[in-house]
Amino acid sequence: MLLDMILNKYPAQEDSLIEILLEFQDAKSSHFISEAEVKQIASYLQISEAKVCSVISFYTFFRTEQKGQHIIQVCRGVPCHVTADINIVKIIEKELGIKVDETTENKKFTLEYTSCLGLCDKAPVMRIDDKIYTNLTENKIKAILAEYRVYN
Image 1 (cartoon, rainbow, N blue to C red):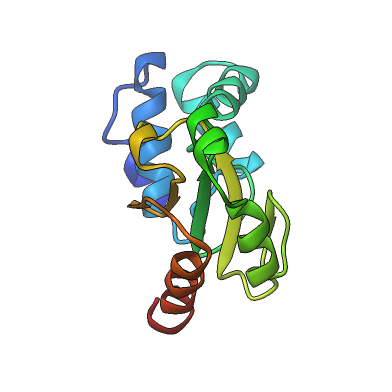
Image 2 (tube, helix red, strand yellow; image 1 turned 135 degrees about the vertical axis):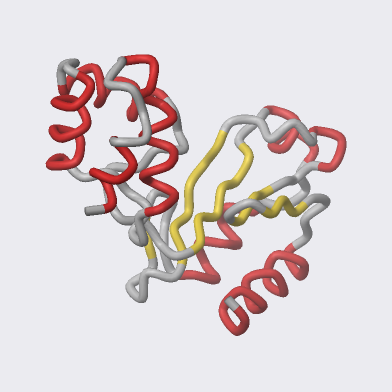
């Protein structure tokens, strides 16, 4: 089993928790950590399930439910909201037919807010998976989403 292989690479110490969670979530095709897997990780590391869950819930990059193939994260930093002439969340919601924290029916996209992406001078900003898009306009957003619909 995938989780067993990953666990066996790390010492059974609490210090290994974040590395195990990162590697496992990245390697797992659905990219989320289930309740059963939390139990297995906690047992291996000899820590409480609550400890594992607290780490998962603290970091926004860990997931406990299946998300879309592509994760769209919209920066909610102050500069992105203050300098933006457009509401990029509303544009994305309209284009995809979902709200923030929802996933499209075809499991292609999940829309989320994220903390500042550190590109305040290029606001508004969003990230899709590991790619960052800056200086967004309505047309640019529509073109980006169209490309992901077709090619990804």
